[in-house]
Length: 279
Length: 171
View 1 (cartoon, helix red, strand yellow):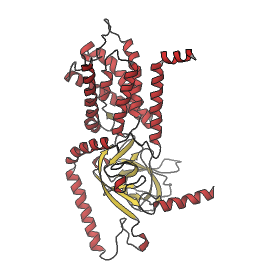
View 2 (cartoon, rainbow over the protein chains, first blue to last red):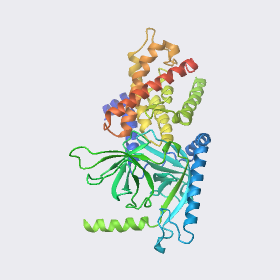
View 3 (cartoon, rainbow over the protein chains, first blue to last red):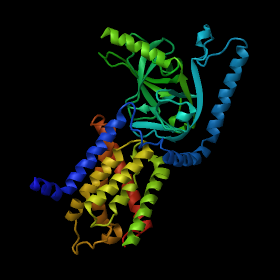
View 4 (cartoon, chains in turn blue, brown):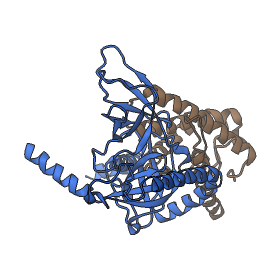
């Protein structure tokens, strides 16, 4: 026993090294999980305050862009109001047929305080948190398209998993032919994502629009993702290789909208019951 | 002695803030990152206690991680190079040996010696960082390209900083 203690003491540098590295590895693995680590992230008050300051400087350079997007969105909304003076317009552009669909989605505006596009797993920090009604699992969109999904929240800040994250998959639909596939980023070009699982009998063309499908309980149906920029079909391949150019430039993200699906938990729990029964 | 410690603490925060407020936004061509805070770790006095150095590396890495939302990644890479640093320094001992409070900088032993000292450590730091980030060796060539370009970028910036503030930490 004494010799063991002596051995550990003599090699204390190595054992400290081992301990610290294992601890870091544990943190990394834990952070990759759905919920993530609770303390060491940018929703921490001090870190987020400093990030807001830094983003404040960056915002000055994006003001023109933000103004343009806002005025365009305003114009679009006004046009819709004129076109449909009586019918209630839903966010996804369809006219309301069923009164039970009223109030399915709630919208919160939030400001981006920190944003990455160059890592392999990118996260965005926003300035709304638990006290503003934000919960993990809510969808985040911008006027131009899909942004991501809330990963975790502190009292006043939230961390969003961007769709520029190699492990994130979003159910999407080819708007023209209504075929459903999956959007996933390959970790390289922040302008472009891959649209997978479209079988060869479909004929996608460059310029086709890809929107969210609404099959999962997170994103509303019909939110813009982007347009197809290239289509390849290898010989003997089961699916197309489709690249989609994102409609939202993630480097210019400034204001986003957090979407709360009031029916989400209901849909999830119902689907879980079915999955349990089948098993 | 205590003056050195105070200076070290101050420069810790300078490097940290410079990294997370400014260099966080500087990424060339979506591939070349600049992690200047590594210079702080490389320039710690030569004969520091290895336990202290790993602790400093861990704290520095974790602080940077909080801003990058990448818990543990930078800490992992920093502890690794802090552990390897002493062995590497022993291999590179100049003729007269080191003095206790020497910082292994350009002003101490010249540009060539410093490049030989810093390059492998920066490379190992970046390699550990990027491979741990992607969680394995998928996309190996793309990641390797990222590591090489980032190493070059970081090294150039470290050298520029050395010439701008020569001997700042060498007392």
